[in-house]
Image 1 (cartoon, rainbow, N blue to C red):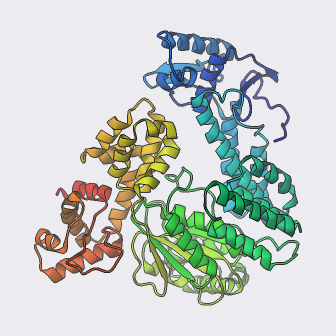
Image 2 (cartoon, rainbow, N blue to C red):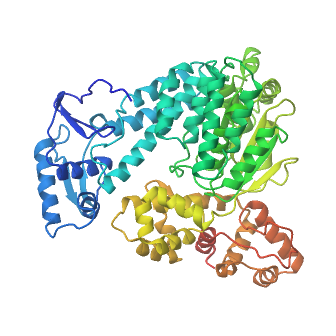
Amino acid sequence: MTRPPVRTAPTGAVYFSLLGPLTARLDGHELPLGPRKQRLVLATLLSRPNTPVPVEVLTDAVWPDDPPRTARKNLQVYVSAARTLLGPAGHEGRDRVVHGCGGYLLRIAEGELDTLRFGSLARAGRAAAGRGDLAGAARLLREALDLWEGPPLNDLRDSAGVAEEAGRLEARCLTVYEDWAETEIELGRPAVAVDGLRDLVERHPLRERLRAAWMNSLHQSGRQAEALAVYDDYRQLMARELGLEPSPAMTALYRSMLGRGREARRPAPTREAVSPAAPPACTAAFTGRPGELRELLEVLGCGEERVVVVSGPAGAGKSALALRAAHLLADRFPDGRVRVRVRREDGTARGRAEILAELGRLCGAAGNAASSGNAASPENAASPEGGAGGDRAATAALADAWQEWQARHRALVVLDDVPDEASVRGLLSRSGKCSVLITARGQLAGLAPVHRIALPALADSEALDLLGKLIGAGRLRADPGAALRIVRACGGLPLAVEVSGMRLAVLRHLPLAEYADRLDDPSAALDELVAGDVSVRHRIASGWQDLADGDRWVLGRLAGLAEGGGFTLDRATEALGCGERAAIRAVESLIDAGAVTSPAGEVTAHAALYEVPRLLGLYAHEREGV
């Protein structure tokens, strides 16, 4: 990376940099940060700005193997020196470093730390991309990348604790670079990204998204032979190092380049509207689901299936899987990928006119309707039928414009968090080459013909991998038995595993075994699965509200049966106090709603073992008092 001009905070404020060597500047002048151990303490505090850092974490960063008996006293000396060096925080003159029950906390504003500024610019850039403002997104993402001066904390990586934090920072920088490069390619400016991508691929040869962007930038710059060589090198590297083939998406990209001959550059897609940011609970890198992702890529990539439904309970990772697939399928849908949520934030269904209006804005499909004077106003579009007066003509105009747009384009439309079939029937393409990827908690059995993918719980290995990405592989290896208990207590639900990881990443003093004990307690598990504003109970409650009153009562009765690992139809019949036929209908109604899982293969109703996801069962106990 080229080193950008020196940055400074406002006059009189210290500016810290972690995206390169650890530095601090005051009014443009670099400050001496003291001996190495003091710099390790400061780097660890800055890696977790405005967050209490336990003394144990600081100790591990400075003395990873054998801390002296005076470690705590020495830490106090280093922190005291940092206070003196850095001065007060803000205009109020508050202490820069404070100590509380959670450990030491370093107060710092966004304009005083490059990583905070980096994150703010990256979020703004991704939001701009989600609105379709690609030029603005490229500018903001480039501004973020200008803060990246090289391997983060490269002068302190001999400390395992600091190296782990540095690795996370570098991964964030690489992701933003990928976002920026892909945006520039979409804008028809691939040449600006070529050299930087080549350098990064040399440093991170197995990072597929980087390599795909490099291939695309070369190909669209008219350098097809070099682009194909990039793939061939990657294929050989994967076989040699991992014994694997490139992913289906990477192979599809390669084949599409072969088919284009020496075409210099295809036109940039009209819109890239899939937001690169995951829902709040999905902050970790995408993990697991290799089989489901492969199936999704193959089905949508071949173009034979036009509608795919991905179903699973709340928190199963449906949106994350859909967004991952949409990203990897960029080359198959040259006219863009569009994502629209079909529910509002409170979980209620959005009206058809409101969804059509958003689709029209994202894709430019509302032009004909608007020019004819029939476009629904924002106020009307928010109601189910186009306004309080039932402006059906405006809604019909929007629907016609959307169908016309789909007939003329090849795009992927992601309809996320669909409550029922009626919400999407009028949105599906009647002709053309557009495909629709639907995520829903229920099975949406009334939609046909569609390809269906149901998301089961994560396998233990996948869940442990996800947890390790959040708390660190070292901490996971320190007590693998407790880590396994945690993911199993989460029922393999990705959201619950992620929340556990986010919580443990903050509570670094908390032994994994103790947290596993808390999750094993049925009366406390849901209370423990909260991290900031992300609550597993809240997400499960949203799914509970989708159920009919009768289904809720049935689920409450069946949840008790599932604690031993599942229940049979005979046990369900007994627990519900009804006949066999009624019990079958009740259980299958919950299967359709995504609240009960059944075997993947064919088996008679009497031989099947049905299951209620553990956390949903605990919530059902709370609500029904079973």
